[in-house]
Image (cartoon, rainbow, N blue to C red; front, side, top):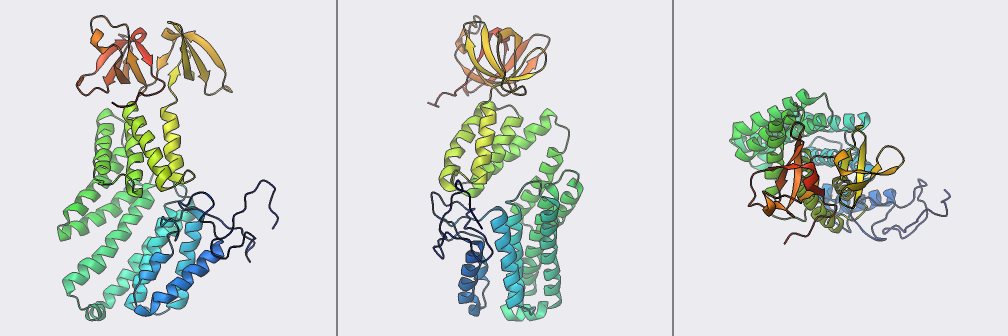
Length: 422
């Protein structure tokens, strides 16, 4: 295979070669490694994981499954096609090496299918049809294995020295609730399959209720509520409830620099944008862009998602009287502003500030107010516009200013760069 002059080639950290492997594939990288580290041939990664797995298999543990989904160098999960290929290789390895249906082999398979599901979730969302089918198959395979375990429950209970209650809770119900949860997620990814998602989540909920698992019950109920809210009409109450749930999930993290906290921060930011809390969303995304770059690296999907949403927050969009959307670039004098079309090849024009309608969620400051001159210079974001009075409803960042204020068009100015929080 020939490479182009502009294509960067990196040596494989395992075999140290930067040439194509026996499958004519160059070293790749899709984890959180930075600079020139972490590149490897997929075939080398499979061989490496296989050899590491062989070292621990005689202990009859399932620990070797953990070797496959994470990069040895950065200790972060692989993503996308690389993660999917390694998951498939892991399943093939287990099926070839452990053909009988002993308990430990069944555990290995369950964990390998978990690796497969995690790999699928790093792919495009909503899932392409083929990947989604593979994910549904993986979850159903777990349920099938659990059914086999039920048949052999006495042998397993004797092998592990556990009671019937422990067997039911930890092995049967634990794996079933996991599989139903994964099926819920897969169906939740596709619009039109909300009922299937809810049905699987309700099966999880029933299991959690049978054990009085309050945290599990709360989580499943929240997931069902999120689906109902996300696919319900976009009324204000629905958006507020969704924001509340996202904020609670984000606030549950004790550490900011974990993959889970980064993921919840992005979900919260999206909910904030949806409710026109533009300032809070922009500050949160700015903070987590730095965190994600440090934890995952600049080229990681999650970093790019945060950066993309942050750029959207910073766009400062307005509509002109003809309804066309523009990005406002700057003010000129007291009454003019320069705007750029987002649809017509970046066409720019200068227009009167009274001819623009500022998008909800846009950060502004007040100026020229006389009766409420204490609000002049205060930072807030626009939440709505009253057509009859031609006033914006402005919510201020200053927490002492609890109530929103109706402000005329001529008394607001868009803030292009948020000031630092004191």
